[in-house]
Image (tube, rainbow, N blue to C red; front, side, top):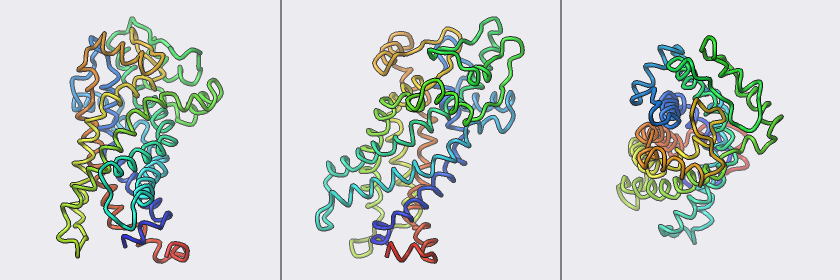
Length: 334
């Protein structure tokens, strides 16, 4: 199966898609809490922690409020996860010589290349998801401070985007779809609008992949009984993915905070706007202190751990290979 899995791109796409959709469905509420915790400023804290955020969100927006933006993730997570996992395997294969074990440096290089490839999908996906996830926080801020008007700080007025935050008289979350936000961004900013925060996304995803993939490979190898029997139990793949994912997630958490702040088009009252990565880092450090860079770190670890644990189980069990074994694709990937 290992060899088949290395050369079957359709199987990788199926594995990545299934893993991504299952994982996102399970952990999306925690991801929403992470986004809102990262975006709230010192002195304007609406949420004390993850549980407080989720409880308040359900009370004010209903149960489905904790899944705001999930449709975007479920739509784009298939190509995103498929690119990430398939690219890592591809570059590992290219860097290996006659099947010899890769050095740690080459494993990190393969992860780096995989991280660079995935941002094609990750950046617009995160861009849209963050707008929808953070809408409830801004409305909640209006309810706490009704005399303060939420302002638009994106260099131009957008009817669609401002509609979801027009809460001066009666604060409430107005449903605006990702498609509407996409159309408005394309109309006002062009394709560049969807790739706002690309630099920060690269800063997060490349180091994440550099840490995650080599660490996972070594943890996964520990589960092998012997070189003659390289198979690993599915639970070991899951635990390896969880541990490697959580470590990598916490390691790059400061970059994730910067990315979230840069990609948030709407700002609440008295919230800073940022001209770029350096400006964002400098203002956060000066006004909120170094601890601000770890906002939502525990939430992110809780999101990434099961997400990548599930992904690796689906990937190594070979669900895609099993499904394609009964389809015409096996003619081309055998």
